[in-house]
Length: 149
Image (cartoon, rainbow, N blue to C red; front, side):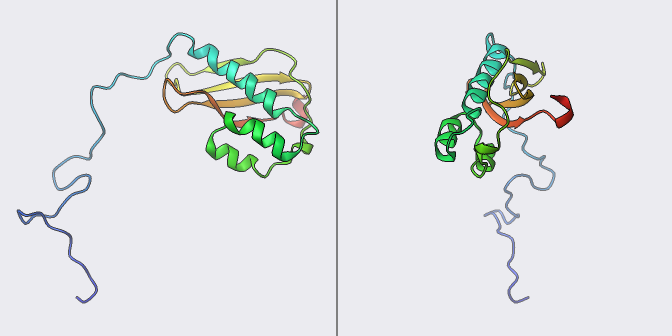
């Protein structure tokens, strides 16, 4: 048929494979990697990082450019894109009122949900890290619902 290309073939004449082919199983990555785990100090580092995140986030009266420059290094790229259009004039929070507390999943050392008490209620900050040695970055900040302040 004109315009239809044939699959590439190997020198032996069989179809080439990118990931799996025929009876060969799907590639599942390297073997013998250690399971991720919580290292000493990891569980304390996420709430500390979330306190720094909220300290940069809670800047009522700050211009968008100044506010965004202060928070940008503390957020994941994806979350920063959304906050790039947020106007900090809409913030109703003005200060933290207590220590941050974390909820850790023992099986997932790459995500922590942190409760940060403020004068506007408890904010939930999702902290992520890409590897066990990477810095914790905020991936979301959820303010309290109107009835929960």
